[in-house]
Amino acid sequence: MSDAHLSLDLLGSSVAPRRGDPAPCATRLDRPAVLSAYTKQLFLGTSSWSFPGWEDLVYAKALPESKLSKLGLLAYSQHPLLNAVGIDRGFYAPLTRAQFEHYASQVPDPFRFLVKAPQLITDATMRDENGKPGALNPTHLDAATAITQFVAPCIEGLGAKAGVLVFQVSPLPRAWLSESARWIARLGEFLRQLPQGPCYAVELRDPDLITPRLMRTLAETGTRYCLSLHDRMPPIERQLRALDALNALRPGALIVRWNLHQGLRYNAAREHYAPFNRLVDEDLPTRTALARRAADTLLAGQPVIVIANNKAEGSAPLTLQKLAGAIAEALAR
Image 1: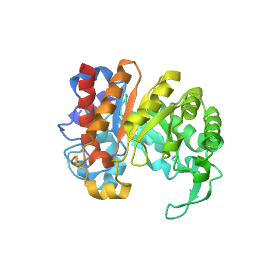
Image 2 (image 1 turned 30 degrees about the vertical axis):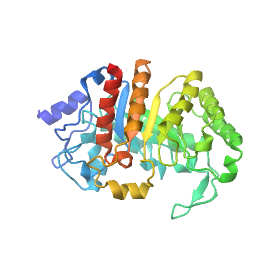
Image 3 (image 1 turned 180 degrees about the vertical axis):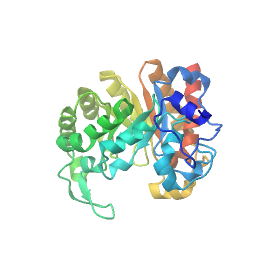
Image 4 (image 1 turned 120 degrees about the vertical axis):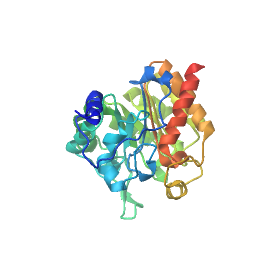
């Protein structure tokens, strides 16, 4: 048996590499030794895995994005720093149980997925072919649709590797924001109808919705607030204060999506940071605050999952390397 096959068997993956498949690199990116005690509690990952610019960071060599998209997850999951990943593609169209099973079969245990719910469920309005909002969406926060199109296939396909199921709510119509209490009540009713067991989280794009009423609703339904580090959202310190209100009512996991650098729009960030192989705009205040909260959460016995995007600082793997070091320092203090 080859060394490659042996290492995969030891990690518990059911898929062996083939000649020409992406291979993990002998990377300088690793977890600090102090974090080895939190292997099943601290999950760090990127929002996807298909970036050719990650040569010598995640992959041994540059390969086409199309090949990495289909075959890169197996190599990604062998990386010593990365034990989680986001699945964003289901936001645009629901994925099947078979698709989720395929993802799960490629990664070891413990490894966790953070999965975004389809916009079919989370968008308040329908989008045209250019992505612009139009008529109201009849399946917005419809529990039956969420269960059949998202929750059931995700849980049945990923099993224990389904870390967090995130409902990212796109910006609501302005008229709805003026009556936010009504929408929050609707959100609560939706969450109460979902099957118990999975870890659910709500991510927002409207700062006005971050209210004590929302936190009470999340606490009552056993749902987590997903910190969205994004240009549309307040800085991390304000969101952490909101999370404190939730934790006072119902402690739980720290769930973070470090999406986008403040002051940049998504397309501008993509052009500015490509090919995503170096840190361009380091965000030290965010990193420091996040590391301290992650350390506190770990010491409290709660899990932490952080999913980083290339558009946060320029390179998601390097963002996570710096964050892991900062968490280790915070724990040491």
